[in-house]
Length: 422
Image (cartoon, rainbow, N blue to C red; front, side, top):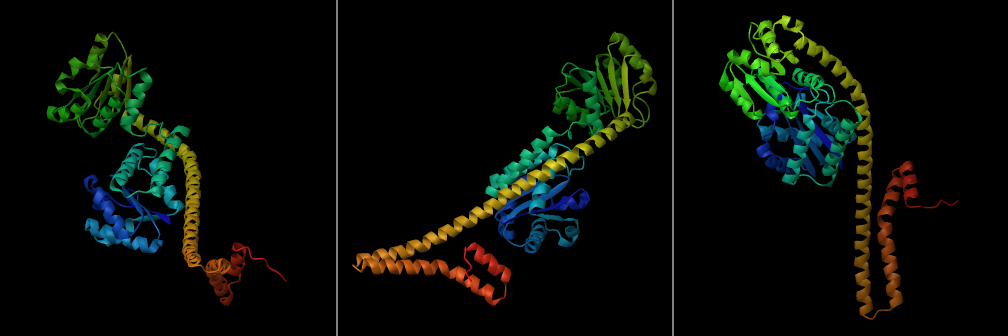
């Protein structure tokens, strides 16, 4: 029994190839059943995200055969030639596969080092496999151990503590300036991907209120609806500025949208309560001179990039600690798996011996019922039992001796506790 992981990710293939073998969540249950039947594996789970698709299997065959069957199945299931994807695939077996799964769950193999979203996606893959009936003891235990490792890494290291995106860094800075965000009012200028991510982080941090200003109201409304935000036009910014404790801007404008005079008026109305402003746009949305005003904390995208660079260094240092945890826990899991294999073998062997005993015992009972001599019946039973249990070991010893396999012969003598006498 072995654990195998097959994958393709952002490091090995561009999105044009990754998207060819991604899995639709609605059809994943069917895919898992097809996978188990086609590859002849015991258990299976599929992780499919925008950055990676990975298949996790528990199987008995050799890796080469499993690899061939998996590529054939991917080719048929996604209707894509194997030649397109084969060079982008990576393979792990045994402890390497376990180690890889744990690294993925901890964000150690992610595009953004230490990102937490992948753990939720791993949990989703686990739930989908459970629902599809493609998971049993080994895979279930592996996922549970993997989740535990990810939690330990988050608890024992600081790998996820530092902001490594401009959106996250902007919100983190706001949290440092304001004791709590739940009473702050935020003005977001723009409605693109960056501002939407900022709004998401603010919403998750229970910010008091969000207003979105954009040139096109319809686009802003689609985004604002997710976060219970108000929407205004760019022309309404001056009248709303005084209400904003936090202003974050990211548009495609070629000229500044927020000038020094506009902010000065807002500060006068605010009675010089501080304003935190972040300009994520290039060219700038906020005039550089705004940073000269008292009671204004203005940061540009360059300021945030410097913060992010330092934070990435911190994450890399913490990743070393995380790798140590993963290595230790993957070895622990493999120890459990080896114990399971031993237990399975012992159970199978005992069942086989008991079955042989029961057959011979039933014959002895029938002989006794037919009034045969009890001593003769017992003697025959003992002889047959002895011969039955000696048969397989005797054949193995003879084969080792005839083949000149001295090491195997010594091993068999040790197993069966055969004393050597001169």
